[in-house]
Image (cartoon, rainbow, N blue to C red; front, side):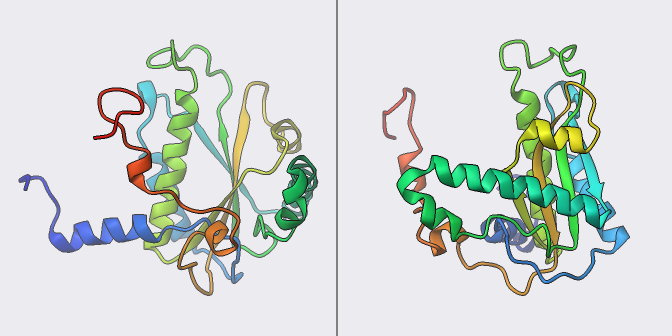
Amino acid sequence: MSDHAYSEAERAAIYRAIGERRDMRHFAGGEVAPALLGRLLAAAHQAPSVGLMQPWRFIRISQRALRERIQGLVEQERVLTAEALGERSDDFMKLKVEGIGDCAEVLVAALMDNREPHIFGRRTLPEMDLASLSCAIQNLWLAARAEGLGMGWVSLFDPQALAELLGMPAGAKPVAVLCLGPVIEFYPAPMLVMEHWAKERPLSEMLYENHWGERP
């Protein structure tokens, strides 16, 4: 055991938050206290980022009318996604894919504009800005779970349409609509598993050694 390790109880809490994090779609309304929201966003802001570029930008949606317009964009994409799914269309339309109307807070997580000059770590992998934003979202997600709040990542929207709605500058890109707030209960398993949409696969199927496809 490393001298830098946390206590057994602290380690257990971290692994518990990771294991019990869920992509939530059902919320109980309520509020998120300003101080708590500040802590969660600070946790997001502590995420690692390639070249310390910190490409994340968060927009808090406090206007109800604007929230409803975002929900409308999600509904448009939900219908288009169902059409693209073909024979699974009906099953998809039965899924609850967002909680925008019910959650306490809606945040839009976006990539900043003018990212091209940042080449440290991005010369061959420009998508590392997206990876950095994803780390910030995950920090927010785990901190929210530790605080007893649910969070859901909604990706069903036309990014250009949402960028225009929110007045984003050219080059900025919305990546996630985040629904955040109190929930009645957390799902005991991922919702898509519970709805028989998909099955989780074991880590052993994703782990190779030395070369692609070679099992440890």
